[in-house]
Length: 477
Image (cartoon, rainbow, N blue to C red; front, side, top):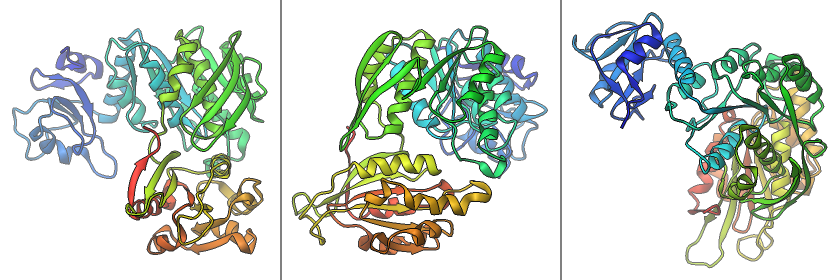
């Protein structure tokens, strides 16, 4: 097997000095998941990675990228010594990008980045060797790490790029140098760092700043800030491809959501498409259409993509659907869990509520005769000065108003909870952890239960508690 990095290649890329010859098959920043033969990168974050170099080498790391030989590490240990580890990782990423002929797609957006990245990975790996990060590695260390792990013979790569503050996307886009840049949507997320939605759109548009010559911008044509995105593309001379319900290039004609699938009728590139996703959600349908547009722009076959995309399932915590069997002895005594506990803002919450509203509970299987549509909601964070009002206004959402019961946790979600009609108002708690002991009474067999909130709300604790009520079965197999 050809090495991902040799000591000579890595030293040339970083300007560092290797203590001996070595060959690495991978790149790791975490000793908990490091594989034998990896180059361990001693980043400094909450803890200094230099403290884990000895452990990494003991686990079989090929070498360690460091600024100095840490205490307790043998003098003859395989090290690549540089002046700054993060800058060296970025240099590795740039070198990996420079040595490949892969077609690169970069994806950003307020909602749907990771799910869309995984959709695109799933369909492109059917058409060539595709590289993408295993997790949501989309920041100042995640993007260079993803690039540094990319084999030279890659055919396609999908790079997710995120931001929480202005000025973060441009340098990452220029590092990735994509052939196609996609913006899934622009919505109220990270508003604490921006004055308004337009400010978020300006930053998201920077995904195009690193486009290769003759690059393509695949943009959501439905959103109110689409003009800002398109203006940026035109200023850069990029070809613009719009997708959405009102978009001229790739157009959704119809979306039909059933209990566990989404059927999409669409047109694009002069062709008509009828395809399905093995998960319910209008937002997933829109992103899937964008995936077809990106695939075509990369030179892949969008017809094959439309067939292969049915095999994709969302990552954990981003809309996965599970059946929790609460009593193995009683046939049908189960509930459905929609785990969407990784992030939340008003746009993504509205999309998840539409999925829940379209679900069908089961009757005559639990303590309560009629199965219910139940939402358990944690705070939506980083929404800025209007955060309380945004939570309160969600009580007027048409899909939420069709639900049977809404439980809430967190000080921000109390605004929504108090705005609910009394008959829909379930339990409220200051923290998600305080809901956990009551889970068996919050939900029942026959219910369809959505758990949604920002990661910082820790509403995933409720997901774990619901899973412990019984036996878990994925509906997406």
